[in-house]
Image 1 (cartoon, rainbow, N blue to C red):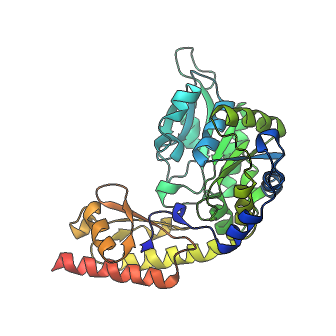
Image 2 (cartoon, rainbow, N blue to C red):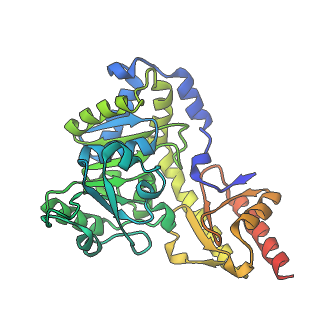
Image 3 (cartoon, rainbow, N blue to C red):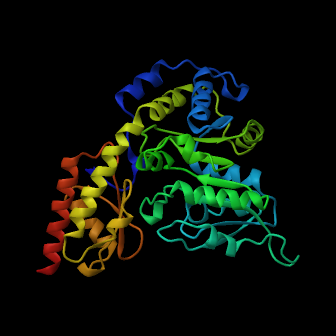
Length: 346
């Protein structure tokens, strides 16, 4: 099967598996796992922050950051299709006692003008005050769109001028850095905290990172333990994470090129609509309304032809490229989609 459901389906490389088998380990809750420590130190260095923390999942990383930046009875301003808002099971309400004020962005991207209109700062007592602004880069449900650095910096300057913190859900922030051709530290610089996933396109089997100040990460470690994320001999996972950080970013260039080829090919098919301008990294979102099929049926037809992909609405599909998908796989996918489109017309 050609699996385009997500870049979370990547398998660890042979090199990662060897590193995991040979990893030097210790008790990470005591801070004694040397491989975890090296991963955290390297992540802090790459992202230009004081410290980093290895956590089991991106959701845990985001939720720890929301908890530390907010207080109960306040709200978080974010984009309405963001992962924190839609795909983390209401955890911010349960764990942090906060609500969300969602804002519709252009291709998932917020500007300061849009955020400013949503912030409640110094407002009357009966209005829920804003405690945090959270952005997402790349933006998953906007097709992997990339936030320009100057936009992020303007938002950072204005949000910080109000005394508010700024968090980045950077599950695919390495994709953003590769697309912009700039260091990770430049992408992370405007933000007080950043979460980054190692188990998506970077290919590690498990894990995410939080980066921030030493004080922030010290408190984050306490919350990781409270949430059940204190791992023991976690170096076997961190070893793969180190390779994911060091070796996998260069593979993302090909993933992005494959996504562009996929988008260009889909756009040529009758009944399918693709916003080509939105395809900037490894995610392709396209509308199949013109085929007369629902996404459940389209996905089924693809599966019978050896391709896995998911619908995100009754008429909108999402495909995600990653290093386990070759250019030949892209061509096979396009051939399968073309056959389905021809069948529906006949």
